[in-house]
Amino acid sequence: MKQEYRKKTSWGALLAVLVFLAVVLWLDQIIKPTNKMYMLLTVLQKGSVYALAAVSMNLLNGYTGLFSLGHAGFMLIGAYTYAIFTIPSSARDAVYQYFDAAVRFSFPEALSGVMGPAGTAVGVLIAVILAGLMAAFFAWLIGLPVLRLKSDYLAIATLGFAEIIRAIFQWQKLGPITNGSNLLKNFARTSKFKLELGDTKLVLSTFVPVLIATISIIIIVKLVNSTYGRAFKAIRDDEIAAEAMGINLAKHKMLSFTVSSFFAGVSGAMMAMVLSIAQASNFKSAMTYEILLMVVLGGIGSTSGSVIGSFLFVAASEWWLRGLDSGSFLGISAPGIFRNGFRLVVFSIIIMIVVLFFRKGIMGEREISDVLRSRKKKAGGTAK
Image (cartoon, rainbow, N blue to C red):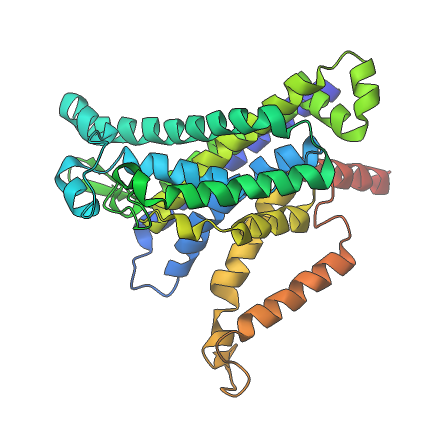
């Protein structure tokens, strides 16, 4: 019975994901930039970026029990890697106007010459994967000494790494690669993603980041539900007991750290796609704190919670409460109260209320499937 229920749940989840992607693709076609609902697409784009970042952080902090604050640094590495390897040669001199660009290779440009329009998509995909691999490589390097630390010491060490990386990427001597303190632009971005099917042009500016985030989160869920995921949870609950059961602590901590950083790098590449720029000054420690807040709001140890928390955070901060900064909100005009910065005050109060009434976050350690299962049991009991 349990296996049958799991199969039904898996097929149901797959169907729900496909329907969601189809709806996003449909919204991409019907909502134009002049439409009042265009902010919905912005929320979907940024929400997908932060959802992947939050889920990847939850893999480390929630499932493995390693308190890391270096996420912004890994996202920075991913964003720059993606941007550097997708800038076309014709625009490279204009982007690196103060330096002689050391990298003059673009994956989408090179592959489009061989494979046509499909080569551009493949080139973007390769650049995204390379962004994750670069972040994972740096995670492996710093993980060798840092993962011996615990609790607050690990958090401080990873936070220091993120700040060091941000400073290094703005170092003028690395200008030929990173463009110094100047921003990178003119690379492959979501606003230019389109698919031509005969006379029909499909806009993919929202669909692409949502698709990448969805596939990445599914992979993380599969990892969490595997034997490796059970080992991560055992380490989180009791390291001594986990080691006594034969779990290699160093190996599994490193695996969790590098996998989490890989997907942080992918989310950084997605952020560069969505924002159309990559600049080290944007990846401050405050970004890590925001992602951690999303994880806590959704529930530490819940993938569904991280996704829900991310979209709620982005929707509230970017859309729903925007009127509080402009003098009018929900038809109420109060320029003396609703002024620039008031949105953050109200948003902070909402966060405090959520934390007070949901001590373990919105989902706690549960997933959506757990909630549906418990409701089904209650309905069955009531029917009897």
